[in-house]
Image (cartoon, rainbow, N blue to C red; front, top):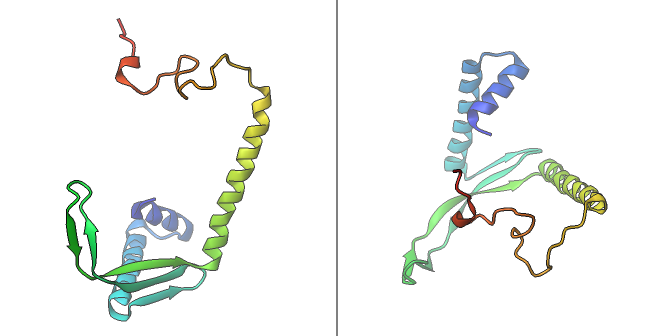
Length: 139
């Protein structure tokens, strides 16, 4: 979801124009950033807590060259979701588990295929393996 989507949704629900809503949303974001820079913390009940925390200097490794690199200390923004948000996100896990259980129960009705258990996952049933040589010539 983008800021434009947020503006569109709020403007439809509240009855303001998208331009008015965009200004309000942008002012809200600006206020959050200003508060983080000034106070280092903003707590939004039932949503979460944004906080600026210092990160210590450390030694890292360049993955390409393997050379050791010094990373300077810096400040980073962290977010800890509130209880309400945590509960809503946990509902996603429950829905996914329920769908997985339903899909597993539906597997009993699928026809068996003659696939060797050691075969590559996509090598069965004529499905492409994702390699270029699997693509047939359209002529």
